[in-house]
Image (cartoon, rainbow, N blue to C red; front, top):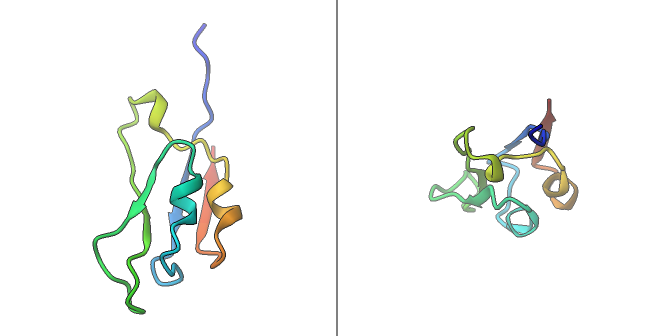
Length: 80
């Protein structure tokens, strides 16, 4: 029987993010990267890079480490 992994996703509020990138640093699956577009405050915010659903090792599990470490409360985690 195949191991069932948890599924999750996150949203990052571009305008709340100040670009500290702590979330990218702690993401165990490396699913958060630096945006190439500035937000209204002049920061390059973090963004969730959505990957192909077929890649078992690169899906968001909804662990919420990114949201916990975010000092700007800019990340929402969805599980299910």
